[in-house]
Image: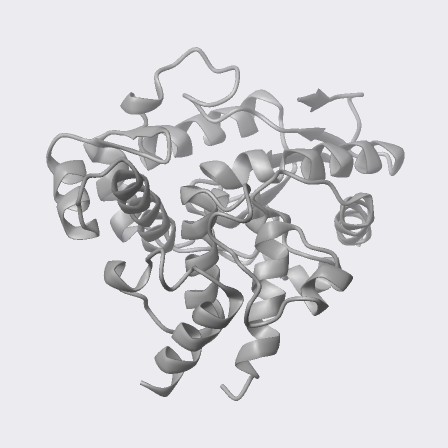
Length: 205
Length: 86
């Protein structure tokens, strides 16, 4: 999604990864609309392999996502960046901006592996996280519906948030429940408005 | 980390399942979880345990994430309390 009226302030939004991306979609679209009212252009590109991207998910890695987000920043001539959760592992960190609740790659990988273990158990198979991780490292593995290639698994295992001087926004700053945790993707217009207000106040400062 | 386990577990569960304050307050040890809540699928369970690990700075083993520990609010609270004492 793109809201571009060729204005002075241009915000690239790097979404969370995996399921958290879907869970926060409406929050971010609401934020973009609120930013528009505040005179700020914004851009929410699809990570390669997700949503409307034509690329295969299984050939993605943190490196490919990082490259794509850096290219998006240039393409849209972004002046600022907002990265959320796992998006902080792949965002163009030379831009000023904000990070929301950054998370280490290992935490995301741990959750994906656990979802894989539970799904296997429901299907009557007995796999443990260590076995799934080893399969993932060598040949790739499907976890929670995502066909993760070996490069993505290896990247997640060691990736740390890349923020360098961007301001950190905590969930408590936004109020309400953390939408990236919610099993059924939800919406919270008040959080969108709060997030947009923090950005609008900071961007002009 | 002296945060009350019961209050914190209610908070995390409420966020994962999107429960309003009234439904969170209505959870009792006998409230069934797994099988009773369609939104509690494998990804939601993984999210729930990830959030609990972050909140309490503990790590759960595969063998602790089972149908038994997720049977009711009470069994899950017992797991969290045991983990925090360990």
